[in-house]
Amino acid sequence: MASQGGSAMFDLVAELYPICRSITGRGVRETLRALSRFVPLTVVEVPSGLEVFDWTVPLEWNIRDAYIKDRSGTRIVDFNRSNLHVVSYSLPIRRTVGLAELKTHLHTDPLSRGSIPYRTSYYAPTWGFCLSQDQLDGMHDDEYEVCIDSTLSPGHLTYGEFLIKGRSSQEVLISTHICHPSLANDNLSGIAVATAVAQRLSEMDLRYSYRFLFIPGTIGSITWLALNHARLDRIKHGFVMSCVGDGGAPTYKQSRGGEAEIDRAWAYVLGQGGGEFRLRPFSPYGYDERQFCSPGINLPVGCFMRTPHGEFAEYHTSGDDLGFVRPASLRDSALKVMSVIDVLENNLAYVNQKPFCEPRLGKYDLYENVGGGNASDYRMALLWLLNMSDGAHSVLDIASRAGLPWETVKAALRSLEAAGLLRAVDAPALAAGAGAPGSWSASPVTVTSA
Ligand code: ZN
Image 1 (tube, rainbow, N blue to C red):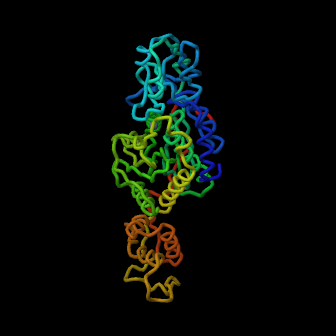
Image 2: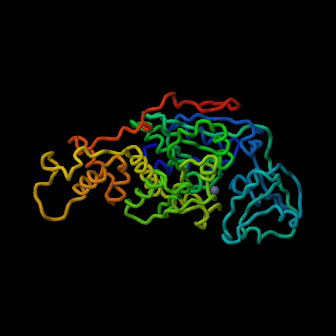
Image 3: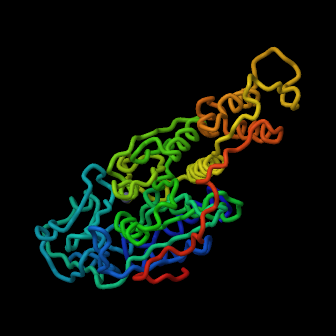
């Protein structure tokens, strides 16, 4: 995939769209195999039955076929036409039933009458079909043959992990869920943007290490956190990504504390973006930031979206298809993520070496020779950096307060450093830690390459 190219990311979304994913099973493995063409993922298989905090890794679910046939033998609901037609984790069934009984297993979305809703039943054993309200209204009081050719049996929960080692063992965590079937924005957009960003970062010289998680929602993050509980202090910043391909404005949901460096980096980048954006406070509902921000974990992990889950009509319906995701939005989302990463990478604190009044910038070739007129952004960046660099304020603090573009602040910073006027605070927390940030996986799991 050409890094951050919107059309390449869209092509990946389109390739993954037909696969029937769930929180376990072959669809997840097939998805991770496809991603491993772009980044060398480590695939982790966690056995069913493993206790993870208050949860248990579930049985593995796989499905081959499912349909509802009418009396003439015609498949009126067909899994092969849309995998949304089957409630995820449906038990196997093959029976003939009347409409009244069948209706107790049918799910529609009356608010979006033409769409097939997406429904799951991971932890309450049942079976069911999803169809449009319009189709249900057209079904006669008759007998129907229902078949769900699925298996629910001991197996594994599968996730993918990819670590890019930077100069420090301190990590930035980027996590996206991989458990939705044919839904393009909620799920596949996050996978495509995370993959493109991971590919791009692999080619860069980085201060932080970057850990990408491609995990089933909720149970996947709970499992990963349980297996890696002892190592979480390496994670300094993080965010979850989902719904990043629709045409809406970018949205950032803050971490639990709301004032972490990652929260301020996102607020600054979106504020500098020049367009509409949304900042949302933390709430204990949404994606896996709920687990990363639970009180015993409490990592500085927010969530990056465009239109938030539940706030677009196509959400969790067949309307969230390839027509709903835009290459330009995927590209913009990837660029926003790269901007946030650039802020984190460069966000050190500096000390002004000539703090007694302003240094005479002309002596250092930093002063624009012609006076008068308004100060340029660049000159303002020089002055803000000199004024606020007392060792206690980071570059992000200064850029946010000055309201100046990051590239301008960075250029001014480099000039002041080169002139010897600013020196980075040697923060011990930023020095490379001991020990390799290699495999974190605990013993009960199987680790393979995809
Ligand atoms: Zn969802």
